[in-house]
Amino acid sequence: MIRVYNIDNKIEFKESITLVIGNMIGAGIFMLPISLSEYGSISLFGWIISGLIAIALAKIFKKLSKKYPGESGPFTYTNIFFGEFIAFVVVWGYWVSILLLNASLAIAVTSYSTVFIPELENQYYNISFSVLVILIISIISYKGIKGIGKFQLYTTVIKIIPLILTVVIGFLFFNLENFYPLNISMKTNFEAITVSTTLTFFAFLGIESATVPEGKIKNPIENVSKATSNGVFFTFIIYILSTIALIGILSPEQIQNSNAPFADAGGVIFGDYARYLMAFFAIVSALGCLNGWTLLQIELPKNLSKNNLFPKIFSKENSNNIPISGLVISNIIVVSLITMNYSKDLSNIFTDLILTSTFCTLILYLFITTGEILLIFKNKKHLKTNFISIPVFIFLIWMIIGVGYESILLGLLLLSISIPIYFYQKCYARNK
Image (cartoon, helix red, strand yellow):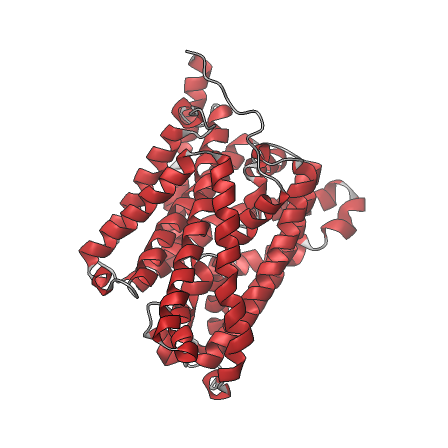
């Protein structure tokens, strides 16, 4: 049987930039205020620091996407700098971080859905609902990259609306008393800023989103770099302004006791109907984010499979150019991650998942930044262009420490699983 593929099955610039924006603006901005509320308004410093570093990382990825165009940005870059084995371990960790992230996104959809269906606060119901969310996104992904791109474009436009409304109208309901004292936790200011920066940096994960499915983007050398830099800057501005507005509307105590802080803020401004509307926007936002990350979730193992570093089943595509087996297998893992956390409440599941996910992604960023710094020693003319990599490297070390020893140990354990897989695949590929 001959399978016919659509040769023009690629997304354009507007869809690639929404892949970057949509993958960053997702559950993070809607759920993180709950995790950050125990520190108070000092968490704003975390947003600013992580945002500036995200912009610096975007510049690094922008340069690399032009210099080393390839089918899978993260694997291509680390392979060039450190070789295949290190590249595989790092990208394996990145893939694991995506699986953890997607589990947290499904939880976020469920959390905001409690506004409409209070019964979802029951542990058995919220687990089932989160699995249903994964199934819905799987169906969208099955239809192909064009469908994924369009869904990402529409949901990104929709998700920006409540954030802009919070910024514009929220300042009319501003209460400066909500910002004082700056640090309401029992931690020192430095510790509070460190944890806040680590948590907020999670919201910027996705900087590299356009570089992963590079083979599915039209004019990748130009569009990938533009989508990366412009997408990150736009997201940074939205995050800062909407967070300031939210803290101005709700006190830290109100945010901490909320499952859906932006929905509750909408309720303060416009009444209960607006609360439902904001919750709807948040759900669409998380769904769009989950949609974009699911694309990366199946593209990474597919590209590794093409390099004989992953089982061939992950590279077999359907008529829509989607690796269907990889989609099914990876989503089974995501569902397993959700069910393993059933004994915790929604906000605690979200926080635990994102800290481990952040650690695994930070490892990828650390190796890529280290590779950039090594170019300085190889060629002195790179000193000026690579200088930005040095403060980014220091920041990443700080963030890795900030995720906490539990997330570090779990992350290292997950990374170690890649080692036997790598050697098995190398032996299998040689003997094939």
